Length: 413
Image (tube, rainbow, N blue to C red):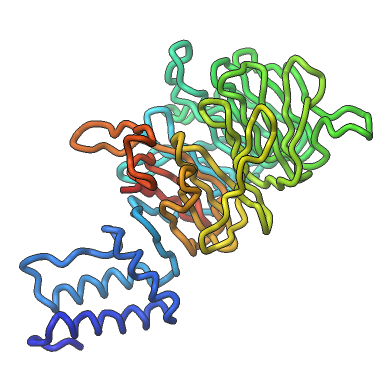
């Protein structure tokens, strides 16, 4: 115990011992320098604070974080973390970012106020209760001038259901029943269309207004051509500039390129094992990122037009198998995965980690980008690389992600 007249030097020594006891070994203690950068985890010394008050505050902080080994590296902090009733497999902000939906392993979509993290809506019905299956994905129609805010979430379920919910009224507007395990849904960026995908190797293309299936994308019968998937499909992404093109990825270690005007996939990439939402195309339509569940080359940047691998982004310290990855600005990508469980923000200009949160309680299956952090009452506008310092993570919007039963929100500074 620190005596009343002890110096801050002795206090620091005592606190270091406390930290070693809490984290169990020297390697974990090294991470303290990173944890101290997160205001919510390590408070600063106040001018009128006594040594005893400071020690008490830090002891309280250690008690809050001692149950897991979560560490923070770089300039990010945890805005909120919520323990939910069941394991969470997916999450999604609504159009205005005031709600955050989480899909549970019990088949229930719980919608939380993103500021208070209080539960606002529970999306379930008799169909969900009588046919329990995990929620595998949650999306909403992208905003546009033609299609304004709908206040709806569309979820996919492992039993093959696709359900669109009006969350304000806790009402299911429609249900599509697919005879497969459905792993995800992706909306067209401009039209009221979407695709679903699952364990039957097929990509189903729907019109949302008529709720009719318009096409099924699948491989041909030619064994000499790899023009479609040969195993489960876990990700799809429409091209942001071309109305007819999309890419998909899955367990067959390929990324397939599709043109809706063609009967089969027109080309493909190989060596990419996609096991979640691990595909994205940049806003310019020129680049692809792949976040793969594999031991090597997990995170790569590709040229869309040629299919050429531009670079493989090597891990800084931890080699994490990835489930998900997403462009959050033109210069930053956020990825999540397991072994170890972590979320990482990567600066594509330096190909280095801008910030990360490591040793989370469970695998990170899903991430979503929220509102851009405000500065001085104004939204922070993403700057050109020429007008900002490299690895300036403050341009990254708020990020939501799931890990075991926890729903997190983090911000960068």
